[in-house]
Amino acid sequence: MKNKIKQTLKEKGLKANWLAGQIGCHESEISQWIAGRRMPSLERAIILAGLLNCSVEDLFPSMLRKDK
Image (cartoon, rainbow, N blue to C red; front, side, top):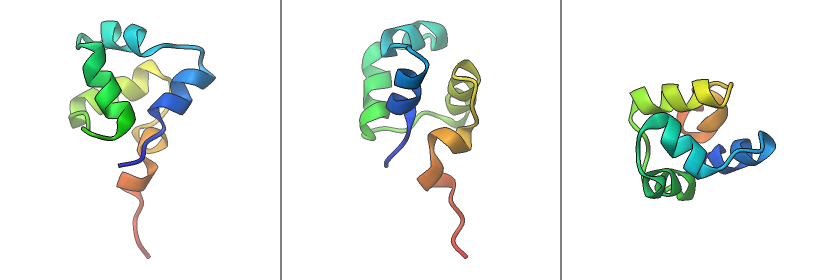
């Protein structure tokens, strides 16, 4: 699933290892999220969005898009 985690980290000048430390998980887990191989839990997605000062919808637009 396509997401904007990597793009958002880059725009904010942050790294995956910083994010992992803030969330309390391994950097490999963040890498899997970035690559779209795994999805964070809703709780972690909310924390992730808060740390990156954006919304969950900003990070995962294709997951939350509503079809008309």
